[in-house]
Image 1 (cartoon, one colour):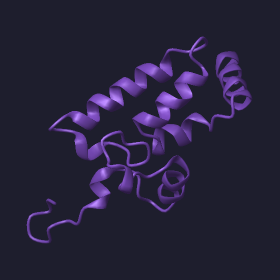
Image 2 (tube, one colour):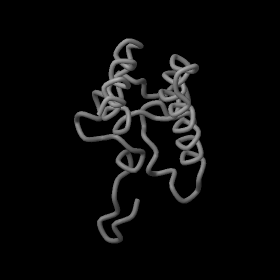
Image 3 (cartoon, helix red, strand yellow):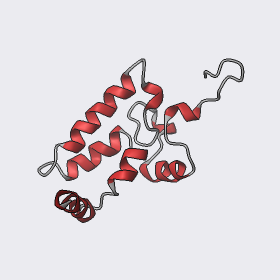
Length: 108
């Protein structure tokens, strides 16, 4: 319990949103940004950022990558952190949700 309160205080002092919002909405680039703020205090942000970056590049799981902070999207279509939280609160958080679903097969 003490560690979680300490982590929440460190995040608040560094102007970082709570972890629940980050895990739901934030992509690789956002985790890298916050990891740079906490570089000397926590390696968790860099490790999670690397895992998300592998997820974005994987043939099997790229559809499950978060849309905000996605590193492979072109600059024109990049969804910023603010846009990502807004869209995420409206139910769209991952790449798969941006594509239409085939009525007959259930695929994209």
